[in-house]
Amino acid sequence: MSYELHYWPTIQGRGEFVRLALEAAGAAYIDVARGAEDAGRGLPAMLRCLQDERLTTPPFAPPFLKDGNIVVGQTAAILNYLGPQLKLVARNEQARVWTQQIQLTIADMVTEAHDTHHPVGAGLYYEDQKPEALRRAKEFCAERLPKFLQWFERIVVRNPAGSRHLVGGKLSYADLSLFQLVEGLRYAFPKAAARALAQTPEVTQLHQRVAALPRVAAYLASERRIPFNEQGIFRHYPELDDGG
Amino acid sequence: MSYELHYWPTIQGRGEFVRLALEAAGAAYIDVARGAEDAGRGLPAMLRCLQDERLTTPPFAPPFLKDGNIVVGQTAAILNYLGPQLKLVARNEQARVWTQQIQLTIADMVTEAHDTHHPVGAGLYYEDQKPEALRRAKEFCAERLPKFLQWFERIVVRNPAGSRHLVGGKLSYADLSLFQLVEGLRYAFPKAAARALAQTPEVTQLHQRVAALPRVAAYLASERRIPFNEQGIFRHYPELDDGG
Image 1 (spheres, one colour):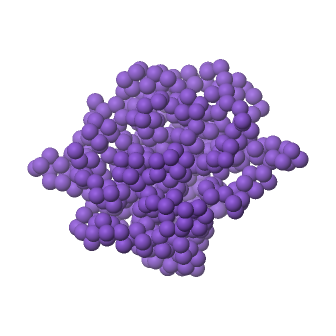
Image 2 (cartoon, chains in turn red, purple; image 1 turned 135 degrees about the horizontal axis):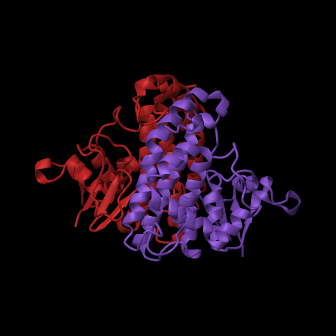
């Protein structure tokens, strides 16, 4: 049976971390909200599911995954759930916890990247909070972006199994998510990301290796990969890209 | 052997979610950074650990837990790790994933509560971002705070095992964290929290039941419980409390 991924149909957003895991594992899945309404899919199908009052574990927000009767929300929880099934996490508990910890740190950085264009709140347009966004992006580009990337560099370098992966000697969902994070940062903040990535060669190489994985490369070249745009989390507003 | 909790010694902050779990379970633990420096504890001991270059799983930031040789960072990952050991999560995988999902949603709300006083970034003082904070807090109080609390109300009401707990028929770390979230909201936003909690009677009662648990009540009355203050996540700035 196919997994059902429920996420906003026009952006990569947080759903992309789940899409990448499913794609890299070659798993069968339906991207529900991108399907045709006359086939019972599309955005209405996602909203019906979100608002289903019989659901005892209703997600707070997309993305969420349906696996038969099981519904799981929160990106990091979805990946923690899918990891063993997709063989995208090591079997031992310690490695599983470490992989999850990395994912949560990626999630924190994703939230901070989002807040550069929405510092005052998600309910207002970017255009209504530009002065605040400029201040927040300045700190993000100068302080937070390098700090996070240096932490990823440090943990790749310290991986006892070698620096080809974040955890152990095998691909995990954290590697895929770090790839996506670097993609997003390069799109949104090309100057600031280039400057920070020049200091993190192992992260840069890990990103390249993930991009070259046959299933990932095929996905990225396909129409299933939604291009970055200015409705998603990573938005390219040149005025926010502080190259220092 | 005792757990070692490493967190900033003068605030509840994110460390409090871990403290509450350890306290409610009656677990032996050392709150390292609050110990005496001449006994090898205190803030320097925490910083030494954070900066230890031999550590292959270095946390990005406090809080982190040491359990023998295992080091776990990220509040939600720490609780996911501790849950089975402290019997603060159900045994079956599905309940464990749901508990984690609730915890991650609590974490999202904690971040948003923090960002009301630091919308421009954590590197600046509140006093340097007051106009931005006023805008962000207005949306938080009017939209986000009720939206999150109503989701918690919904999932308590829908719990097939009854509305005494968030997950199943037993106390979990998510119940403890929801207690702490409500405490923090009431401290920081007394008017906005009272207005929203008036619409969520089951959340209000769950909060009261957790506060009355003998070990939790003893902890809250002890000196181990650091009072809320204006260095933590939940800060009482009356100008940010929008009672509507």
